[in-house]
Amino acid sequence: MLREKFSYVSDEGFDRKMKKMFLGSGAFYLGGKIFILAILIMSYLSVKFNWDLWQMILNIFR
Image 1 (spheres, rainbow, N blue to C red):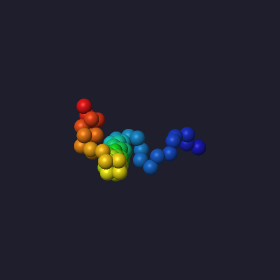
Image 2 (cartoon, rainbow, N blue to C red):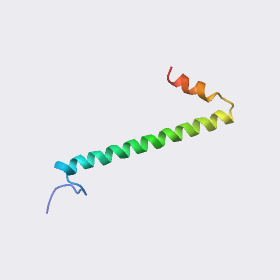
Image 3 (cartoon, rainbow, N blue to C red):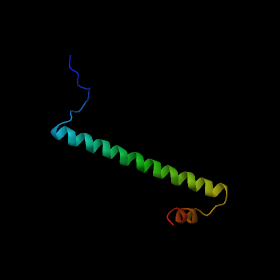
Image 4 (tube, helix red, strand yellow):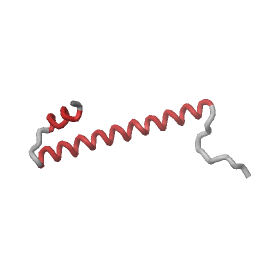
């Protein structure tokens, strides 16, 4: 029996670079989705409670 952990892609050479690239692109994809979702939630709340959305965004970076 082999005692190595199972992986679809090996951890050496070209496969290792591809694995890192896929993990990185997945992280950027999720980050983008979360960012868009946060903007949608903030815009909904600003309309519901009559807040100034741009002032909220500027206060975050202040």
